[in-house]
Length: 360
Ligand SMILES: NC(=O)c1ccc[n+]([C@@H]2O[C@H](COP(=O)([O-])OP(=O)(O)OC[C@H]3O[C@@H](n4cnc5c(N)ncnc54)[C@H](O)[C@@H]3O)[C@@H](O)[C@H]2O)c1
Image 1 (cartoon, rainbow, N blue to C red):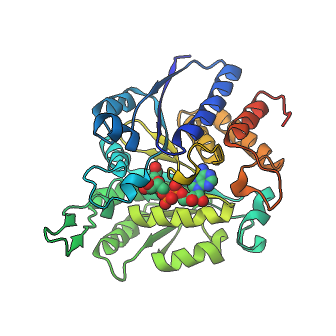
Image 2 (spheres, helix red, strand yellow; image 1 turned 45 degrees about the horizontal axis):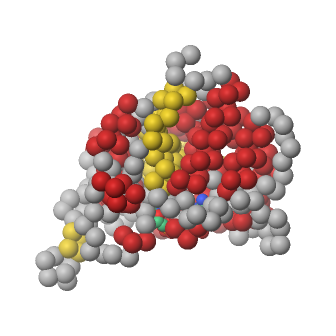
């Protein structure tokens, strides 16, 4: 088999710590299945700004373009979060990376592990069986629209939400195709009672829905969706929505599973796909070896799915689930007074399960 070239963009905060665990797991998988993997590392985020002045340097872009897939940790640093006047920001790197790689679809699966049902702040009977995918548009909407900025006298700031028909068409088709491979239910989330862009989303999605008569199609306003995700999450199969709504709703949805640190994602489109946990750089945990690396490890599982190695993706997911079932979890998922494991220990435990020593 050809060598697999994986670019590693660890980024900031807990990014490097969780990335090390994912690499450990990928190495174990490679060893077991005799895969040849070559890694290339590159700078992104605050770390890249410190070293090069740019949050997504051209060299990093070239590394991503040449790779078969990218594993991405997280970006963001309090020194930028707390400086509203910073001209260059780590988040610009993330947005530039998505835009330049043409990654218009961000796929975020959300499910609830049986052994974690009691660790969610929500009642077991509400969340049991919840299993859905949020397909979030990633390269348009208010995160990218122009004009944006602040007036010269500083008394006004503005962002612009723009969507073109082709941007809606491609993400909605992707979502319907995803629904066809699942339970054939799709809910489009928008704010069509207020926003012109949402009304465009509705008309385009209504039209595309006619091409998928097998899919049960519904529409929901985002404020209602925010509530429904908590009170009745099992009603959803595939949710398709715009950039900002998807960003916010998936952080909310992470509460179902018990921790933001558990959720993986893939970003796909024109060029090399990226696999990343949905959380940020969790600065408070940096260097403490306490962050949950499972979202990062599960993102590596999605990477193998994407490269048509779904058996390997499943093997990684099973190893993570085995650890969760055995109570081998970081503090975010532990009950009060329960033993907790470090970031490194979780990486070691998942690796051990893959190596089949199952000694955790
Ligand atoms: N994709 C990204 O890289 C991304 C996404 C969101 C935020 N950010 C950036 O990250 C920085 C911090 O933002 P934030 O605090 O709002 O979001 P965050 O996702 O970093 O953390 C929010 C909270 O979620 C929990 N959490 C997150 N990751 C966890 C993990 N692996 N294990 C256990 N618990 C975890 C923690 O309780 C944490 O306080 C900011 O600079 C922000 O811009 C980056």
